[in-house]
Length: 308
Image (cartoon, rainbow, N blue to C red):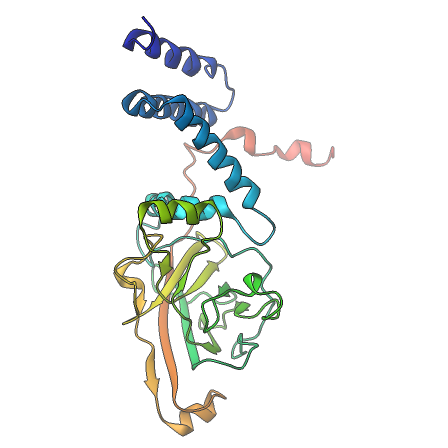
């Protein structure tokens, strides 16, 4: 009889076994696990042929929507909470919490010096962001790379508005000073909707979910000898902090953007009063290598280096 439990389990077993000889043990584990869980989902919900064809067409459309400035698959992963789940499973044991990369880290940020202004539009509420990067033992990390990107006051990234914003607006690649500090001028970012003109928008419409993200600034922090960190700071008291469309808000990343009315401080920072100021400490964890889990094949013997 078609569709019996015995017949479907036999199919799953055959597919799992087909990956048995995969040389890379981790790849074998990932593929066999994927098959078991995917087949289990299908057995549980029993999609019709028409539903499965729609699913294939939907994923095809997601891929077709991707281009050098738009990553629809990342967006789909985000709204399904998978991006945040992977981040949480892999985040640091201590220090600053991680969040999602998002779909708009797609261009190389321009190199900037501490104190530079990443707002190239001259609009919005002026803001000064000050960061200090330390290791988990509290020691400062000079020369740390801090990649920054954010949306405009209207809620769009530069790559979304190539005819409106100059490429590099809201972006900067900085290096920390000897005390692990860096600061930059910008504007207070806005909350914004994730793109809804593609398949992800169709999903949100069908499920009556809103597309909004709370206001935030992205960072990728890379210090020598330490684990890279991808994180945000979120603007306190803004909308959607409790219903982020991509589930990325964490309490410890919500930061007060304090209003400063002092004209002398404004001159010091080369902004106009009133302005907003945000201070945030970023803690990164040292990279550790477990000799028992290191793949010997990945280590090139010294004797072979001269033979290249």
